[in-house]
Image 1 (cartoon, rainbow, N blue to C red):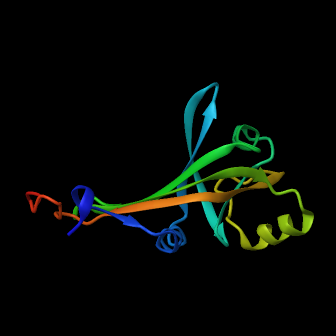
Image 2: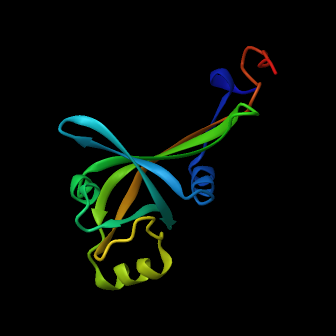
Length: 145
């Protein structure tokens, strides 16, 4: 049985395994006291979410030192199923030269390369996720085909 109307909570290890399978997500931060959402490509570095962006980007300036949320998901609209994982933590630009060089080799590739790029790391304080298995609800109802 799936509680919460068909949704199943995912534990931290499962959330991280699922994040490692995808490369596109969204950074949620505050801009002029309002929520802002930006799509980003990313990679996991241990449990941390790492984003590569231009040093002059609004993203790097907006989230440096801030608590942000990062969300990634995978959805199957035909099967009415999917999952979503949210990582919440403090974002920081990687300043250590050796760490920057390692991430340049092993980290995410930029979709819009820039002459001067930085890596922003989101250290996870909270990792949550849930999965919806199509057609299964706590009410025993199946979705129409």
